[in-house]
Amino acid sequence: MNDLIWLHEDALSCDHPVFAEAAPGSQACFIWDDIYLQQMDYGFKRLLFIYETLLELPVTIIRGKRCDCLARLARQNGGRILVPATPNPLLQQTIARLGEDFAVEVIAASDFVTLSRQPDLKRFFRYWNRARKAALLPAGSMREDSR
Amino acid sequence: MDELCRSFASRERLVEYVAELSPWLDDHGASPIRGGATVAHDRLRELNPTEYGRTRNFLQGAVTGLSPYIRHGVLTLDAVRNEALRRCERPEQIEKFIQQLAWRDYWQRVYQRNPEWIWNDVEPYKTGYTADDYAPELPDDIAAGATGVACIDQFIAVLRHSGYLHNHARMYLASYVVHWRRISWQAGARWFLHHLLDGDPASNNLSWQWVASTFANKPYIFNLENVRKYADSSINVAAEDNAILDAGYDELAQRLFPRLQRHA
Image (tube, rainbow over all chains, first blue to last red; front, top):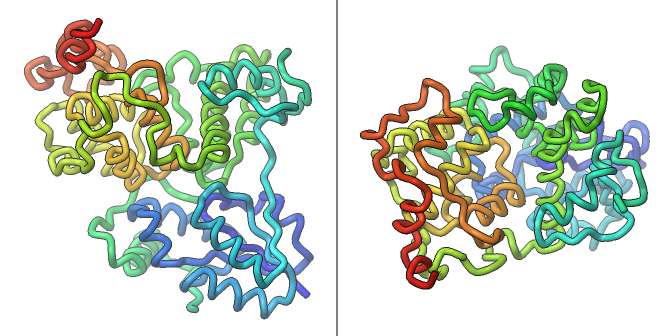
């Protein structure tokens, strides 16, 4: 059984940990979904930028409705669906729908900073005062915050 | 379910192909900014985070052009920060650059915690006006870059031609749209998201809210003197061509926010 890697436009990189998580030989795909792209209201320059980026990635580009295409591919592969984490509500809806029928794993990329407690997000500088020390370190790796 | 082409003889052929894939769009002009990890890493190798800190507010300053690649995950904030740290002796030398990366991290965290803030006012406007006072649609003259305010029209032309705009110019445009024209920030945010290669709901919309004052303590305004300070010689900053921007901050605040003045 092979996993199916579903790359979307929030994570167009073969360095994303979703590739390391997948079983060897797994297929990666990007779904070119006309309806979704219109919902997102991306201009042509953006569509071209996305397509141009895809051409350097080891992905199959498939045109169709994303839920239908992904379900079909996942059945063919027989394994999990692996998808990079995204805050996009439309993509999250698709992930939730696929999760009803398939084993779906959402994989996050590396964090900019790791903070031990949720920062106050009321204003940027409240966050920055907490995050600053870690942000100035390689990999934002200081576990404890700036206090 | 059709598999799409991955091999093209030239960029022109690729542009034609993607245009055929997007018949719903009127404008099929390509940006000079290319997608792909190769270009992204080329730009990363050119990164000069120290110079960035000194000149980033200038429209021709040493900005990185990395934002479209960060927006689409070609590069992570982590990777860019780590590369920047390799290019300095002490992290404090490049704090301004890292702080700008942190803004994106901050916006993403706000988005994840409060997704409803992306299209709704986080707080009331602090302009003396209520949300109902702001027009819901972007006027045609702004969309077309034909406002008659010279520098504003030039910034709009750059936005439409390249899909990219210096952050300072974005702030000028957003402030003009919301405060001079009294258009809702949502209309402006939608417009930017359509055109910008790096358009991101969190960074874009919450920055519009910052300018509008619905996610800040006061509205952001600018004047012609500020544009003159930061613009390069390609921008028309003649007073007669930018008359509505040519005033001091106090006078502009009185003109733009008269209700605040009465209550002050």
